[in-house]
Length: 412
Ligand code: ADP
Ligand code: ASP
Ligand code: MG
Image (cartoon, rainbow, N blue to C red; front, side, top):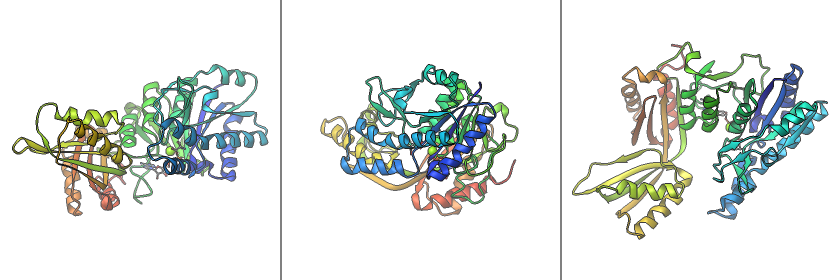
């Protein structure tokens, strides 16, 4: 029988009522003749609560134990979903990651899926089971330890299962009815897209649009998984939501297709470092070894052989970055006068494959921000995106102003 993957995010399984509602949706697909793999997240708020417990117990925690704790939320929902389906007379059972097993790398808290054997679940489908409920976000390392895939990782579990089982479709059920031109919670004028190209979705996700985890989009693109985002709160037709697909399958396209933001950015500046060959390597080598995800980098003009080096990273990695740089200074590898962290910044980005062939997007972006009196602290560009770092208090204003400036509420 054809296989369908259905993933339900935290708000879609937040209460027993919502689990019942999701299970009914699964029942509809089963009655159409699909064998269904259901991927579940933890009930909303659960993962945050578990992360809080870990941080309070041990600020510089052992990542293996972090994973042991934060993976637990999904186990509860998987069991409850299987029970709910059984109550509806749908033959179902639950699997935790290690039982499948979802084999991952051993990079704890940010592991990558390497292999998903299908024999176990397929054998059960052959015996008449109709739904395999799998706990998202988790796997098992070569050392046999529980791993997690990074926040939002259940999306990636879902796409990886769709690829492994050759599913007809991977449906991501969430609390909005598709991918929008920007976060609909920030801009009233945000418009739902019927389709979005893999590459654009990849950029939007990696620049902060948390509707899909970046890695899930990467996998869908690589294995050509038919990926759809839709609401678990509304009755759904077969063409509901947003289809993430290849560029060729898209008719309409604005130059800019979306605005993304990332609230939790920090800007760090090393004041007065020697401007000599090898200095960037001496700074960013230790940061990378310490697991700091450096994003934007700017080196200022140098004066009398010394310069300032600015970079951005997630706010929760500031402590780690400071420690790594202080250690490098002690070892005599870099010499800087001071290290200044600004944790009140946010990143706002405009994304669109149309930018490849159209100039002037950056100018419009900068003019719009200037008209709002918003100062730009750092700029980064690529072929299909422009990102700026600004004061966090202007983030929402910037998103709305850019959405208006690029007329994203209208179809081109
Ligand atoms: P889930 O718990 O179902 O995984 P998430 O909270 O991870 O849901 O992702 C859905 C949220 O993503 C939405 O509630 C919305 O606020 C946010 N979001 C950010 N950018 C976008 C966008 N461009 N389109 C739709 N949703 C977006
Ligand atoms: N529960 C995990 C998180 O909150 C994974 C997920 O929901 O995708 O990040
Ligand atoms: Mg999510």
